[in-house]
Amino acid sequence: MSLAALFTSLFVVGHLTVSATTQIPFQAITDAQRSHLVNSPVDATGDSQFYEFKWPIRKVAIIGAGVRWVTGVRREVGALIDAVECSGLLAYRELIDAGFEKVKIFERDAVPGGNWHYTDELPLEAPIPNLDPKIADYEPSLPSPDSALPFEVWYADHNDSITTAERWRRHRAPHAVWKSLTSNVPAPHMHFNGHDWPPGTPWNLPHALLTRYLRGVYSFYGINSNDKSANVTYSTRVELVEKRIDAEGIEQGWQLTLKKFIRLGPSSSKEVWWTEDFDAVVIATGTFNAPNIPNIPGLAEWKHKFPGSILHSREYRYPEKFANQSLLVVGAGTSATGISADLNLFVKRNYLSLRRSANSTTPTAFLNLLPQGVDIVVGIERFHPSNATIELSDGTLLADIDHILFSTGYQYTFPFLPQYHNSSIGLDEEGPEDRPQPLVTDGSHYRSLYREFIYIEEPTLAFMNMNLGAVTWTFGEYFAVAIAKIWSGTARLPNQAEMWKSYRERVAASGGYGKKVLYLPSTGGGMSGYIAFFMGWLNSAAYEFGGKTIDGLNKDFFEQLWVFQIAFFANPNPVRIPESNHSEGFIAASTEQPSPVEFLDYLTSGY
Ligand SMILES: Cc1cc2nc3c(=O)[nH]c(=O)nc-3n(C[C@H](O)[C@H](O)[C@H](O)COP(=O)(O)OP(=O)(O)OC[C@H]3O[C@@H](n4cnc5c(N)ncnc54)[C@H](O)[C@@H]3O)c2cc1C
Ligand SMILES: NC(=O)c1ccc[n+]([C@@H]2O[C@H](COP(=O)([O-])OP(=O)(O)OC[C@H]3O[C@@H](n4cnc5c(N)ncnc54)[C@H](OP(=O)(O)O)[C@@H]3O)[C@@H](O)[C@H]2O)c1
Image (tube, rainbow, N blue to C red; front, top):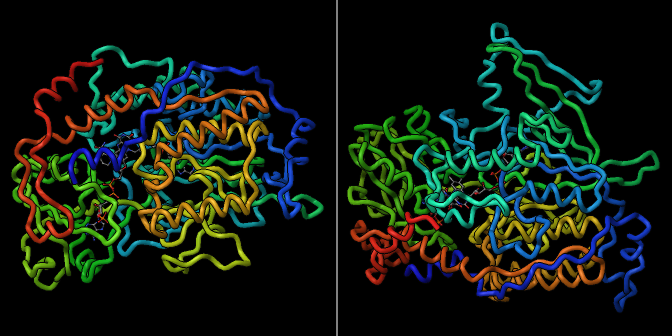
């Protein structure tokens, strides 16, 4: 794929014109005013054209204090996408401003920042074979049903099966960022409105800078971990989200079962379980929590025979650990190519195994990132632990490999919503009709979301940025604005039949289920069509019910992104790709690309 095509597949949204900021006088909606949602126009069947919520929405929970949930819900909506920000902080503020009685964030880590919180501490070893997606991140930990809540368990290392440090590691789950990682989206597109990066900030942001920046903005809004805000609780993992049934047996929102980890000393801790009730829940838990390792013959036996030799990319931190060893990195995405490049100066042999799945969505230009020294080989056929060789699909046997580093992506999982997982459904099958359609089946993709964010079966569950291939911090803006408007009654959702229709058209346009459904199809205008849709929907709602309007993308957005991507992928001396991979679409880097020197100058000159 050429760089231009790569850019198109990742980022092209079309040049939408930027209009002036518009703020229509806005008042928090009351329950009485919500009546317009009940007395809405009817369609030919006599049903409402619009979805009618089963209960009033006053209290909202947000799961995850990362980045994306923060995006989007901003007061100065005119600048909405112009600055391409990233703030759940603003989503949080918007939900409060929209008149919700309670908005509360639950975050399993001790600090905000999500994916960007780097630690030397590693996540748990990836299971082989993959666990069922329902428990691929963690298995919910619950007190016995007859326990009085809040329920506490105290631990001390001297009489516990695991240490305090290990208990905390399991609770919070360290993230996938490695030490030298920089952003692959330019700084001007990773910032909060009103909190500009200082002049001279590099466009490829070191993760430490991004983390400090994020924490600063969380502090600004008073919801950092040292702010003692009642609206956020850190070190708290959401274990379960279940329907709440009132005394008359009627559904009335959601009950969250929560578990907080409290360190009492260097070798002692306690965990506390309790429940809280909400009317609606924003799920902003990110998409990179559960590793995916392909099921290759002989792999489980290899792991058993050579413990510690198999890693997933989320367990990678720095190359020194692998000095003078031979590594085989598997995959062709950003993790595989980024880690191979990072390892290159340190390791004895640096292999990268490349194979393309039938429905691959990986842009081939990531391979441009590889420096000379990386030896690209074809896909793996089988592991032979008996003689410690790895057989490739062209018959080659690799020997003396110290570590295999699977950079093969992640599984979709929402462990706190087990009722909406069903791994017994085949890739192209729908779930049984007498049960809610699932959110997750085989873990390769999500399902049943209207416009990628509203769970059609239960529209009081909303998801932030579950799709891929879009500039995620940007797209989150639209979701967050829409969630606040829909739940506050200042925008309307189509009825469920219409939402299913739109969803099924979207799946068909993607060519069916699987990883490809995570990417917006080019039919219907792709991301450009999506943005136009959100603008039309939310802006006409603003004129009807009051509230804020949103704008399209600033023209500079594309220019900046384009320049950045060219610099990011520039490599005048790309590595050779085996001919057998050419038929899979993997070819050597384009020679058409503009001078890398020119663009690298641009890249580092600040803005
Ligand atoms: C290695 C790597 C590099 C990346 N580089 C870039 C980049 O350069 N540019 C870019 O734009 N994007 C990049 N991304 C994508 C990245 O995921 C987004 O930038 C961004 O972090 C997504 O924000 P989020 O809030 O959706 O998810 P996250 O940042 O993952 O935050 C989710 C939060 O939810 C919390 N959580 C999860 N489950 C629970 C639970 N049950 N209870 C309570 N809390 C929970 C987590 O602890 C976490 O804090 C990268 C991703 C990876 C893995
Ligand atoms: N800032 C940065 O520089 C940076 C660094 C790392 C990650 N990230 C972000 O993190 C996210 C996740 O990226 P990721 O690279 O971890 O996951 P990914 O994008 O899902 O890529 C997984 C790769 O593994 C390949 N694969 C799967 N099974 C395989 C097998 N059996 N043999 C060989 N290859 C196999 C896939 O190929 P197919 O497509 O053919 O299945 C794909 O190339 C992305 O959003 C990325 O942008 C950013």
